[in-house]
Image 1 (tube, rainbow, N blue to C red):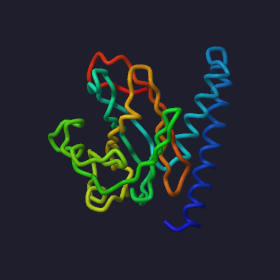
Image 2: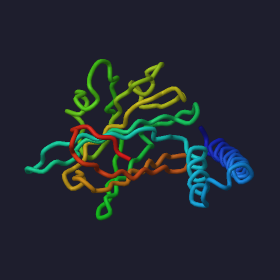
Image 3: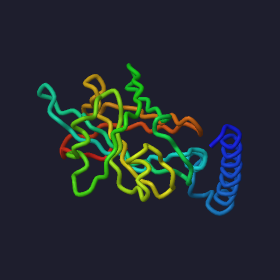
Length: 207
C-alpha cells in the first residue's frame, strides 16, 4: 500500500470510528443512562475507537511461568494477533516495544514463523531458536502461507500468536506489569498492559 492510499484509508477508518462512537454513545445516553456511569461510557468509546483505528488487534494474551533462580517468573508470552481488515502488513516493518516501567526494549521480526500443527503453544520448537531480541509467529490460520513463507499478513482471516521470549530483566513475577506496544509502519499503534497473576497454574491468562 502506498503512502497516499495508507493515509486515505486511515482517514476513512477514523471517520467511521468517530461516527460509530457518536452513534453508540448517543444510543446509550438515550436508552441506558441510568445504569452506565461516565467512566463506563468513556471506556466503551475508547475501546471502540481503538478497535476501529488500528490495523491490528490483540485478541488474547497468555504467559508461562518458569523457575528462575528459585523464583516463579513468566518468561514466555504469546498474544493472539488478528488484522482488522484485509491489507498487506509486512512483519519486517512491525516493531514491538516492551516497557516494564524501568526499561524499554524494541523487538524486530527475524523470520521465525511456523504453523502450530499439533504442538503445544509454549512447547513449540520455534521457541528453541527464538532470541530475546526478536519475536516470532506461531501461526493458527494462514490460508495462502504468506505469513509463514514471506512474513506478510494479508488477509483478515489470518491469525497467529506473536511469541516473545522475555529477557531476564523483563521476566515477570507476581504483580509485575508489562506494556506491550505494536508499532506498525501504517496505522495507529496499539498497546496492552498485562499484569502477572498468582503463579498457581504454570500457564496463565494475562489481563
